[in-house]
Length: 439
Image 1: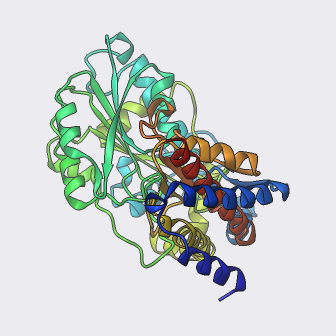
Image 2: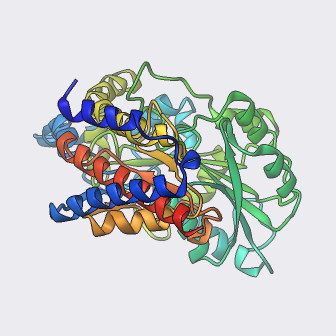
Image 3: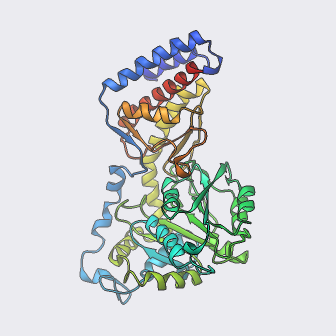
């Protein structure tokens, strides 16, 4: 064990949990932590744990993608020339690829560009301007439109709802997914039109929805005929510890439950190949694919089919994609271990925070002492560590407990991540001590 680790472990043995300390002990601890914080600031760090960006090493692993199409004859999918107009819903090979990954049918897939978020925003936009397949009227004609937002959740989901003026309703997360009792109760309101979900390795909690939660989603009986489940399956093949975990096909489950048009599933290669140059997809009922093909056909001829083709040639199929994800795991797993090591060593013995330990996805969700997340975030910024804004994982950026912080360890190299985690742990302690001493 390194000397640094030994010294900190020896120190921790002499420190009780903060809740058990006398005021004098808290004051001494505060002075020690403040000294450590000032040392962090003096280093002039510039480290980033704000977004789930793949590291350069991960991008290098998949750079063979760049040379997949080298000759004119490489640009054909059967008799379709990917360089030309047409095939709005995607090349047949690309639709078949995503169907293989998600477990649905090629006819239930619409292949998009680099960002699935763009397609999600398009769906919401068209719902407001024209309505969904079963909408009695465009959502802009409704007196009130409400979105259910499992929280903590993905901030960009919430921004879309806020942008279009929907009323955002937080739904607590449980270890099995969103609180389905609340979801089932809220969808009885015909003004509730949509729910956001990240069903596998949820952002940021890293939760995999249980089979029972998924069954209850498929069997929802919403009052609104055009209620939509946005099933953002961004991390469907993104294990970094252990084997791939199969996931049910929500499209067929909704069909079996009698509501085939209720769900819109999204995925992309953003964390498989290039984050800014991948391909995405929407999977939905064939009726929804036809409906939105007509709507999307007004604004485009097709997405980039050359990029679709080179991705299929490189990724091949689900089995080969999972082999590529093992390469990513070799980069990701050590970084998540660094986060776990620091939190377990520096924070766990003090008893004022808890966090998840995901086996996939891109984030660690940290719950610190209530009333201190914004202060800890501010202190990190002062010490040169950038993190996602405190509160961002809740609708309207309003974390009612001021407790949640999202850690994104993927981008920094391990040595930089260790420095960033040292700063974060110091700031968590300092914020907690300030809170306790001000009581």
